[in-house]
Amino acid sequence: MGREEVLAELDKRIKRLEAEVELAEERLRYLDEIGAPSRYKTLQRKDNSVYYLLLMAVWVLLGFLALMAIGHRLPYGFNFPLLPYVLVVLVVVVLPLAYYYLSRREEPKTPMDELEERERLAKLVLSLFYRPLREAIEKDDRRKMEGLAEDLLNNPILAEAIERTNEGDPKVMAYALYLYATYRPELEDEVRETVKVVSNKPIKALLSSLVEG
Image (cartoon, rainbow, N blue to C red; front, side):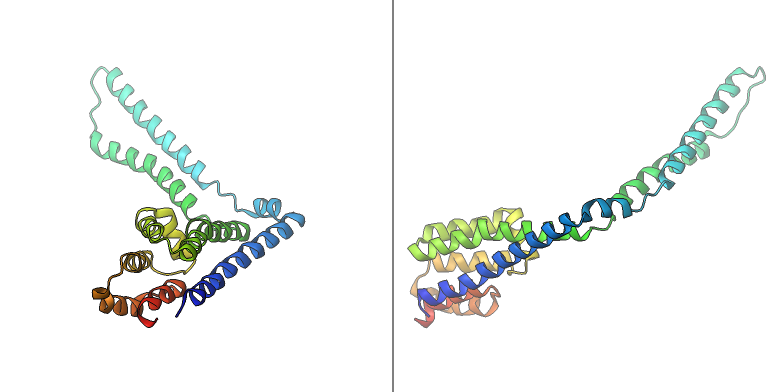
């Protein structure tokens, strides 16, 4: 497999991601034209239960402070176990805060959020990996390929984008690029074994070119 075949395989992936970006942009424009953003905001469920929990926490806390004040004012003293009451106060105060945090995390994404996320991830893979890789293959710049391999291992944003767009395993892809960039005849068996496990088609084609001619 020659360089032209490798570039052709790479161009397929680039065009697929470019088409995905274009499709996402078109859908976002359409949703914006029909006023979808404001509708989604209106339809979002407004949950006031957290405010009731906060009010209850304040009420319990005030009650606790009132009991302490009364206990100090009474001439004959007023003894009651503090620990259970303190535990109740802590639970009631922490509960609304935990509920609010979890409810925010579990808030479902709107279709517009998902489209924007897909567009963002596709653009990241294109700009940070595929386009630089194509340039490196065209120029047979193996030092640049090593740099891209390091990016796959050390840039969590790129690695996450690669995984979420189903382009392959960043670690395996990085190892394959390192093998290609530092290839020596004694590494042929290692190359053949890596070709079997790498799922990214452009990199599989690139690595195969070393041992298939």
